[in-house]
Amino acid sequence: MLWLLIPLLAAMIGLFMWLLAGAMFRTFDAPKRELPGVRRGEKPMSLSINRQLFRFQRRTALFAGPDFYRMFEDGPWKWEGRQRFAGVIVSPTVSDQKINVGHYFALTASCARAEISHYVTSSEIVARDYELVTVDISLDDVLDLTSPTFVARAAHEMGWRGDLFGVFGGVLTRETGGADITADLGYFATRSQYSSALFLSVRAMDDKTYAFVTGNRWWDKEMEEYFKTVDVDELRFREDLLCVVMFSGAQLIRSIHRFKIGAGPWEDNPLYRMSEAEVDRQLTFNAEYRLSQDAHIFYFYGDEPVPRMPPTRSH
Image 1 (spheres, rainbow, N blue to C red):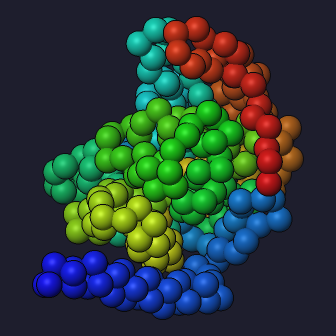
Image 2 (spheres, rainbow, N blue to C red):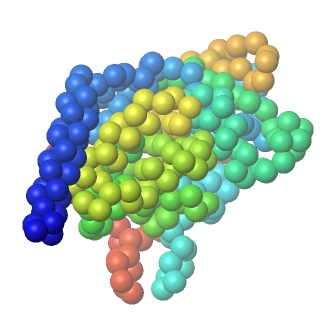
């Protein structure tokens, strides 16, 4: 007779877990918090950012005063390396294809340090060869890639299929330079006229947090998605885990109010809100150079490369 109680016990456990998930989602459905200096943008899936951002800059490429803009030129080094959401796609069937450029900042100095420490593992070398750069910046049309729903929607436009967190997990890869899906999302962002993208820093995440978001903890797919949604919703409001990548040096230069290098004084940016033409005249790698790079972009599925086309948006 005892075996007859097993289905009843399983049903009771299932009911308990369903009620627990419902309680969690009543919290999740509550009014959203906001990050300081970050608000919802007018463009679908976008944010506007008006706050300080941070990055570590190599001292040999550090410029101040009227030459400040030279730190953010879209030179060949920005096109040729594989970066998360930027750089090149490496394909086994065609030559490497350029996507766009990427200029990276973090929302906190600690996150910026976690990022540079992935690439330069010696803290002594970071202290000797790099300096913290802080900028006051205003950005519109920032694609929100901290949202699993937005990531899935953008990835779907680029041909990716899969469950919500299967797709989102690809964005959270710890592989240096990202993965094919991050390259596609960078392409989607630039060709859909987003200026930049906000994303979670896997370098700043501790191993336990990373495992919670990317691993499988539940036997039930819906339960897994419920709890991961709650986990990610918490992470999206942690400033110490967030980065921004900007897809145009010229636009970045025009968006910075002021800047400071290390513990030095704040300096006004003389090119803030200048016209695109005025900024372009200052640049060595200007709009004409950028267009020469864009002309070689291809998008490919399977073995046959085809020209990349702007994705059709459906919001």
